[in-house]
Length: 306
Length: 333
Image 1 (cartoon, rainbow over the protein chains, first blue to last red):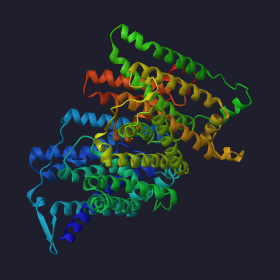
Image 2: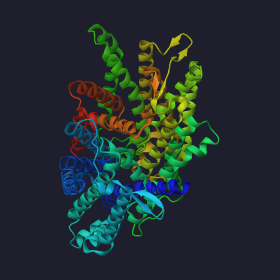
Image 3: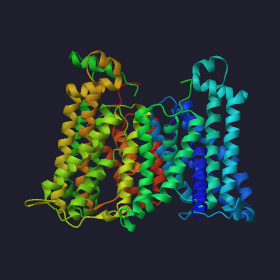
């Protein structure tokens, strides 16, 4: 009985970790390569969820929503990069924080105007809505679907960066932009591409999470901070570090929320424990980051070339 | 910041004006004009029957104090903190929790607010100031989030609903629950904070902070330990912001964890930048602009945040020295 609950919580933690990874990967690339802090990264997460929800509700097909939302987020990402973000690569972090803060305000309000203040809920197709029995333990099919999709995306991203010509250009631009440009790499195009791919990854995260939590205004604002924490823990610019840290943070958060209230309940009254438990889980995440920053300032897995 | 601060400081130290600095003059004049206008504002607004705006201005002044304190870190020190609003919460909860326990004694509440803010700034500053750049941004955010979630989790002090303060702070006959009294107390604190900022900016301490922001290595090469000066500035800024939180709790009669969220800290940074970084009059100018936009646009459209965001982006793109910078835009960039 308890193992069933535990395996389910473990799956939830891994699923949250993978969603975090989808956000953190783009954030880490943009940060590592362009030295750009993007507080507006969560906007693409939100837009992915909203566009997918709209199409899914109109057509009745979640998969169609998924397929339509990806290029839409890609275009929005390219437009944002071209209109605003590219002017800030050489500015200091303060200006970047503020301009992306402004973008968050604009985007949240635009979504409120277009879709109304209430969120949207996304219908799941029947084949994803059920339960799957694995070795005597029943697990929700959709959570497994998220894990599968995110794992495929993570593998694909890793392969593209490590094995392809474009990936090599990206790595070259990251380690020494001037030298890469001198060797004939259009770093501007690479930057735009990296930003847009990051937006799409965040969009996939938002799409995947939409059937569980629905699409709501500001849904990206809390998770983008968690994703920033993830890339600091993992090491800025490291995809592998982001992956490990994302899974770790996902597990701390989910397992902490699930089990800390009962652990605290042994000492405190139930009402205190039930509200202090989730808070303590969140504190643990930030505490982890602080300890990492104190003892390993460049993160757990800093990229070798920096 | 691309300004060549070491050269500027060198010029000042030898007291040979290498180039005219109209910035300071316009800035100080603006500071006096704003403070004088704030002093007469309640009478003027009462005379024309717009008392509501007095409350808006009072809130702006409290935010202005918080922004002046942040300006010590960002403006002089060049350290971007995305967790500064935590001190508003620490100051506020010092009032709220003591009032909740039945202690409405002014010196006790004020003492607690200042002491806890200073202690928190000192403890977290010792760790945070060992990091630079984006790591500093993230670690200050982390400390603020820890307090934020602690208060969210403490149900006996309201949790995420916040804590209502039924008793205002009293100092003998002086009752901060009286809006008129509070207004002039806040104005006095703001004036003192701005004066203090102007003096510190010109002092050796301020010069050292600015020099360390420009080039930390050179500062240590001449034999100064930048870390200690930064820690002192960080503790001073945190304490002053805790005082703003103390005043804010008395003004609103309410404290919530959301006052410490990273959005609030982002707003404080916005206020400092819009007003003009490292200027004396910038923080209060930025706070007034921030609240007037909020009230005015909020009355026009529920979608005012959109225009607010655009305004912010435009300021960063086109007016990099803020409103005060626009006052003396003589030098070509």
